[in-house]
Figure (tube, rainbow, N blue to C red):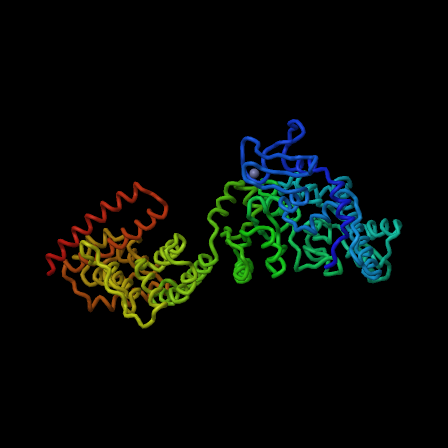
Length: 596
Ligand SMILES: [Zn+2]
């Protein structure tokens, strides 16, 4: 790529007023021949940041950032050298000359510059029309109902296109722009019955700008349903490239560079709402498909990318695709779990910034996100379904480095959802790594483990765990009289699947003949009840066995609740649960003494 001549770069440098440039970012105070203020690169309460206007340099004694005016633009805007020069040249009205530019190239550049001016004028026109015209009153009402302030609408230069046939193009042609140029800029088109008119009419206009804020095209939202597509965008042309566009990037770059984080949402109004709430480092991908080019732009803007896309299937798939793309780049991708059916704009309007910040804080890493998806779509009501889910989750967990907090957390989450001990998940990961290795030996605690929770993972441990629940219910059917006190103590928390819980409720209601009392319309419950009833003919009915069975389930319940209390740092509940666990363990010891 050709470079600008040294002469034109020098002219830009000479034109820069570094005090004004830096002053737009942080308030500066004169001290002698220098200026000082709060550092825009790190958080501080007392100024350690200084500007030397004579040498056109800045330096921070707090964090060590320093450089010249162009460096300042690079750092605060997240631009490279060339882009910073271009931005400054624009601002100070200096024409940049390229080294060794051939005449044809120069002609193309001038043509492009003319189209860019045309697009900028269109944005200005639509914006004025939004604020000043009677016709746009409904658009103003629509935007203000969404809680968007005039300030934020002006910052993004939101506008309205007149519904008349050729208001914009007519004016532009009077100013000397050709039909060809209007078509090339995506602003004009030929009508079906001949004639030439505006490409956008009767729509709310969102200018789509490049990273420096230069308008390249428009996204246009229909105000009335049923008059053409709801959203209409500038189609691909010599200026506008759809796949590269990120709405709001020009305003997001600075804040994103400073926070080392950029938030990605789906829609224009989401960006506006977040910006208005003070979260300025955010952009929209305008729809749900994220392209490689957009990902490259995001990675340039910040090394942590937060995806806050819809919870629906399209949004989820977009996040997965993004995850794969991010894998090859040096960026950290976090997936924000959005509540079903709600977008960031609604959340900000209804619940405020804190709630959205909370969602960002809880964002998942890519493996966590993928594992949750596997678990969410798996059938966890059967042992086979859970074994299958673990098969799918294992390689995903394996991508997270061992002995890290996030790996432990992920293992715990999977164990909780599959209702198996964490040791089982860990062992299954070991097995995956070293297939020849025999199954690990038991993980008996010092007090001697008795429940299935303490056992070594066998060939089908999930089956065994469900089996313990099923068998206890089978014993309740086999001898309702002896089982009664245990059935009374049994709660949903002891059982790991919906059908088993419904069977418990049924048994509590009709202990003597649950099968006769089966409600219609619950085939899952009917299947489980039939299976358990059959099993009831094989299980032992001695009181001590039922008691043992119950204590085992109770111990597993306590362990599950303990894991949850540890995860939420609920220390009071942890203490209670440890005491409860101790007493159940003692009782188990006692029963085992009786049984042996
Ligand atoms: Zn600093």
